[in-house]
Image (tube, rainbow, N blue to C red; front, side, top):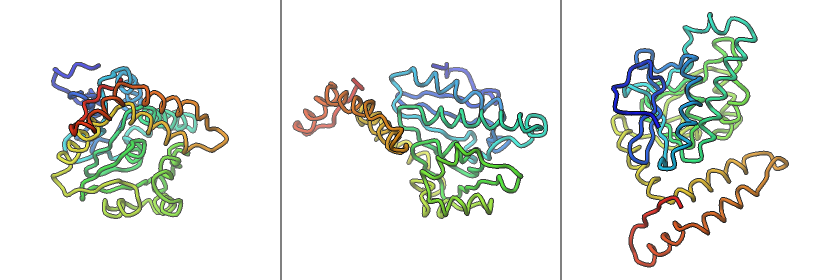
Length: 270
């Protein structure tokens, strides 16, 4: 895991910070509203691969540095240099999609803590997370149509897991920004909190998730992902094995003993 003792710089983008059982993936370009350059997109799968090797981590939180902006999307200032041909544009999209897939592949809960802009690729990052919590002043949008671009089809699947096709079309066709209140209404986010209280709510949520049995959370996340696939591509064996692992685990014995003894369980993930 990364050494968190050194003071981070903006060249550490994103930055992975670990506190106890919680990892934070920090999008770290606050002077650009945390817009992600290509190098940062490429770094996301590398950092998450490190994270996946740490059995002590139970939750990952994705947030923007600076306390004002989640992510304004891709760094458009790079486009002329690195998206100048159809081949280059496709390569760029592939790197974006690899970052989304890496987030989804984590077998622990991933929570997006959203303040300010959550636009374009930034919304793609949030949609690749399991849960999305936002401050009231946050806003959301997909401006691809205003840039002459097509949103990566692979990322549209994540959008359609969250909202209806009709609402997805409105976001894509208009390119308009919507408020956190509207995002909550259509299911784009799970919760909206008042400005200034997001960190507290995220802390309470991660405490709650960390207190639950890690194997149970892994089994639930894996089964939901599996059942969201087309029926002909599903292989239930992995989900059934995850469920059996829970039954055979020491945590299951701890869970029912704690219930009978009227105390909080202490789960160890085994």
